[in-house]
Length: 224
Image (cartoon, rainbow, N blue to C red; front, side, top):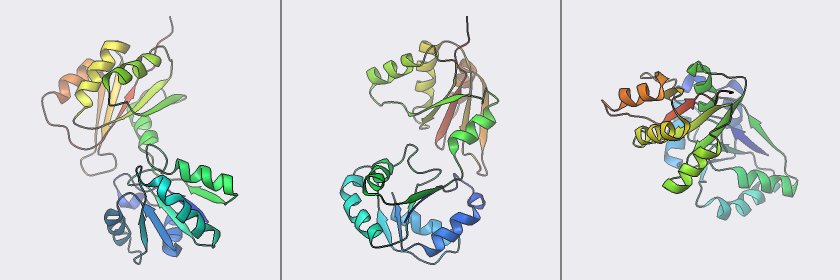
């Protein structure tokens, strides 16, 4: 059986009791970085487990091997580096193959940077749209932002600390001035939540070096 296990986005204490139980009995653990995966289990006092690297560029190659093991009755866990697997992380192709092959799988809910950021933002949470990471190429990125310009829903975007300022400037240029929020280092010691208009956020982060992955939450378009 395949278990899709959400992992803490920063604070190890956010691991669920059910996740601990599943990880303890697992025959194999799939993760992007096996070294970090080993340290993760060690931090939870879980005995060493066999690991198999599973990331974007080897996912397709690994799937036949994983499917064979699942058909043999192995208990396999898919871990993300942080948060829920498949959400801007590998796993979608594996899940589709399990459905195709009639192999049962389940997902253990847990920490999510998307949900956490929406809650902390103070922006409308009754309906929101998760865009993941915007395209790296400028033309595609601009078209992507323009596509959601008139959407009334709160927008959620993942962004690196190196690109957050430029992304905010592009968002302001296309979407106009809106309320927004930057959440970084969520659940960690140096958790920071910046709220204000896009221009205020640009002014705030332009004066210092931003560290840690950022989740950006932006107000939806207002009705005329």
